[in-house]
Picture (cartoon, rainbow, N blue to C red):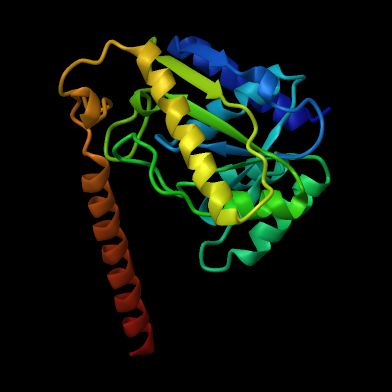
Length: 255
């Protein structure tokens, strides 16, 4: 029993009910009932992690320990909650410690949630993956569980206002068959990307309708979201701007 985690889950489900969110979950049987596994999740919105743990909860009330950026743990409100839930802080400037913690969690039989894309996909297509999920799964000797969420971007995503009222938004979650972590991590990462891309398209086909021009609809489906290429350029510009700001701050401190 984990009283804090159980309480958070109960509160989340109450909030979802108040919002009228309508969940369709498939592939729950692909989440292992026991033992460690990497839960690889696509990233379309800020609340993905609250939905991504649902299949594991339905599979014997298992809990997922998510890797999340250190800033969330530094916050005086969210920090104590994240630590109580045994999530893993990630310092992007020094990722070795978080990687080691994740491997140890997996070796103890925990489910560890990661975003192979690292950041939110503005196009709502699946971006290129980092190899961390494959490497940690391989080192711990556990499978990777591809988990795809569709519809969460309508609740709250990058560059758009959050919609936390009663929206009755449908959200689909599909869990594909495990991807074995043996072999070259680059090859494993490519297989994972292919599986999750196929799972995303499957969820999209059964979701609809897709109003033309809507911000949450991919350009491929006639929506207003940027294409994957456009979104990649936007991400690169944002990273360059952040790097310039950091350099300027260091220059001011040095001066």
